[in-house]
Length: 275
Image (cartoon, rainbow, N blue to C red; front, side):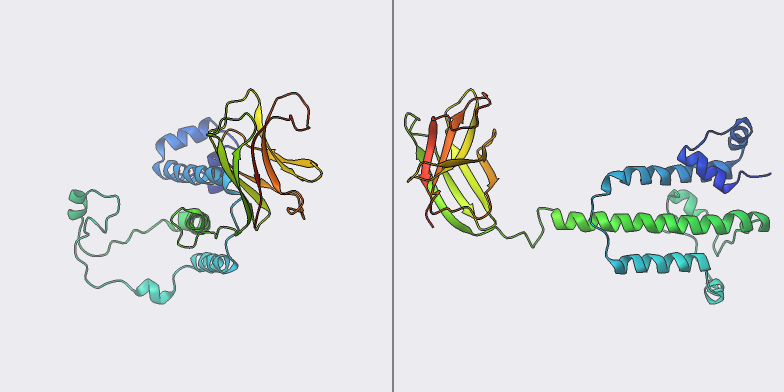
């Protein structure tokens, strides 16, 4: 029986073209070609699933060197010494050795090594090409798995080496201001990495949003640092080289969606930075 060409099966697995009537008929009766096509489709599916992993860090250089060495070894095939390394005696195959084979079938298999001989013409065309292709695909899949596991080990919550929290260089307790209910409160911390960490509680509901400001109490000049959003905690980047000795007052205001970028005049919380 004339089998389908391996390269043609690759195109079918990748969906580059559809099988014609003759190819569909052959796949319906040829177990070997049908199995190989199914294997190629699984590999193609795995490749498609990894398209979203492009942002992961590159594996280290020594990993690629090991992959290349394994691919070259797979292409070279076993050495004569390894080929002759067959046990003289072997017991019946166990259920653990027969991966994917039911235990009752494994126990019924004959003892001793079993050698399957392929037709020389098929082995020359399909065996060597497929072994090299499969070795490359499997090795590449292993590299991707290592990269994913390495990234997960860095990011997982149980990492024994968590990123240290930046030091606090200034802080301020925030208290209710003006007509704000006394239960409203908060804390502001300026971190060494140039961010302002704000935690608030019991703020009154407003029809708009909450905005955070730094105010110079001497001149009453001010600038917006950012908005709180819907949470009680927020990290806001501070402008480079901000003078916290001059702009020492942290203010949380109630703002409306009116396209006015100036302070509304409705301050809810205030506190003075020290540190």
